[in-house]
Length: 121
Length: 107
Image (cartoon, rainbow over all chains, first blue to last red; front, side, top):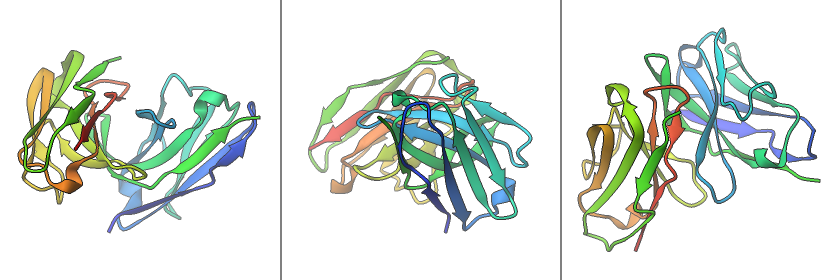
C-alpha cells in the first residue's frame, strides 16, 4: 500500500524559512517523480514543484520560483521542500504526491494527508 | 498557462441521481492529458480519472470521464452517499500543470 506522510509544517513569520518532509513507503520511491501541491484554506489546488526520479530535474510554479527548493533522498525514501522568504500567501496545506509522468508532464496518483504551513506574524 | 473552468460551481443532487460535471480549457489540452480528482472535507484529493477517460485503480465504474480538446466531462452515473464531495480537473498537457477551481456536489 502506497503511503505518503508529510511532516514539518507549522507557524512561521513572514520572511522566514521552513522545511517540510514527506516519508514514502509501499512503492519503489526511487523510480517515480514526486511533487508538492498546495491548497490555501478554503481554496483550490495549486501545483508547486516536481522533481525527477534521480533529482536531476526540478520545476517550480512561478509563484515560488527562486524561494522554494525541492529535493529528494532516494536512500531513505524522503521528499523535501525547503521554503524560504515565506509570504502570507504561502499559507496552505502542502501535499506530497506520487507523480505519474506523461511526456514530462505529471498527474498525481497518490497523495499524502498534508501538512499545514501558516505564515503570519 | 492553460486555465481550466469548471461548471457548475455547486451541483445539488440526491443519491441515485446522475451527476454531470464540466471542465473547459482555455486552449486545447494535448493528448487528452486531463485528470479528475475527488476531495472530501479534511481529506487529501484522490485520483479518479486520468487520460480523460481511464479510471484509476479501485475507482468504481459509476465514475466515467469523456471529452477531448477543450471540453471534458466527469459523469457519476448514480450518486452514492459517499460521492458528495468536491471534484477538481487537472490538465497535464502543457506546463505548468493547472487545476480547475472545483465543483462541489451537494445533497
